[in-house]
Length: 109
Image (tube, rainbow, N blue to C red; front, side):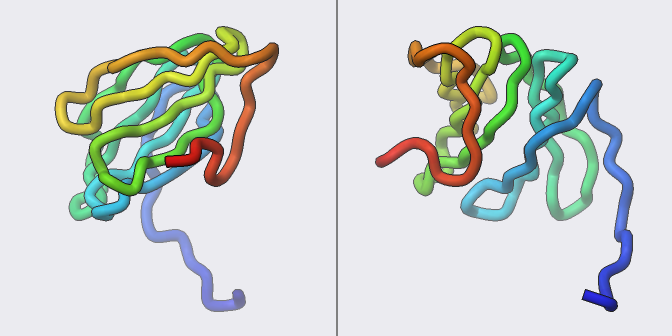
């Protein structure tokens, strides 16, 4: 651990919370709680590609193993957003109980 060093600072939107990478290691994604969005970065260049609007107070992120979908928990909406990682759009929303919060692998495939 004594060899850790800062490589880069990434500019996200308000209140970055969770981070994940896609299975193919092409994208890095950050949930932005107070912006109701996800920041999408190209890993090779570490440049911002786009910001994707999702729910209210997004938190947990999980990339599907097929590389085509991303699951995002929305704490204040009580939903999980399913995003298409090819076109970067919402495919559907899954209703959950109060206060959808998640970390790690939270969707079984």
